[in-house]
Amino acid sequence: MSERPDDLQHNVNPAEAADTLFPIRELSRLTGVNSVTLRAWERRYGLLKPSRTAKGHRLYNAADVERVQAILGWINRGVAVSQVRALLAQDQSDTPQQPLSDEWTALHDQLLAAADAFQEDRIDALYNQQLKQYPATICIEHWLAPLLEQLSGDVHRTAQLAFLSACLRSRLANRLLGLNRQQRQPLILMLCDNASPAWRLWLAAAWLAEQGCHIKILDQAPAPEHWPALLRSLQPEGLLYYREDKPGEVQQQQLQRALSGQPFPTALTGPGCLLGLGADAEQQHQLLVDSQPLSGARSLWQKLQRSRS
Image 1: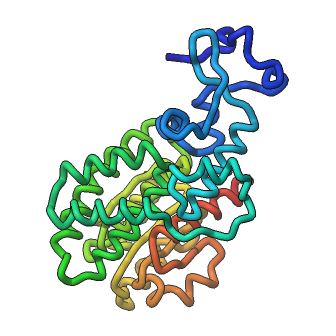
Image 2: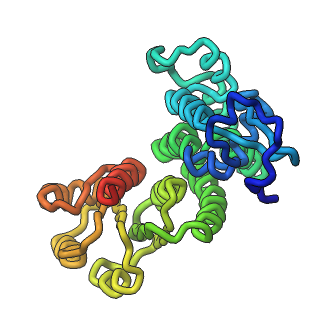
């Protein structure tokens, strides 16, 4: 149901009337928090108190934008959303960074237990529940990525890692599909070879999609010698490549030729890129090098933002 300017309630608080009022979709655009999560913060936790139109549509102002940013600040420190209201009421903006809360630890343990038991329905329920309460970027950084990294370092849980990453991949693919229908630019091409754990690339892709990027992902990418046709056709505004093993000399030359003269920023991520291409890449203005796709995605996004400003 749309929220039109002529639908404004005549008895909106006079103090708020001096400010520009806007609907929830605009608050979502300004803060990067989706509407489902904003409604959950209001209904479950009392974090937001919007005005209403005569037909009951939510209306927000600049103060609400600042409040959402404050909420995100606490969540980014590892504080659970259920604890944020009390902190905002105490105006503890200068409090030192908090450790991860018991709620995050509990969520980690619940997802780990579901992976250990190979319970896809439980994994699905936890995933859907948390993406209603938290922005997807927070879930990726504080919940999904740390747990998958833990599993990847446990030789006794190889099957659990494979199962959980497959479950998450299908859900992240559906999320990317929906976001790509809404977002056409900037187009980011994301590639990894067959030997690299694709879940790291998918998490990075999901993170970039939440920033507003249109994602094309190939987790079984062709060799770099075949990239020119791909790049000419897609004309991406950015590229992220992930590789675990160090490329051989011939592969390094192919990669350098494929990227030579390209006008867009490129993030080369993973130990393979760091070991095989790091020294040369750092001398090239458009190339970023990082050990992990997720942190490489952040650097790529920052570079895109600077180039657009």
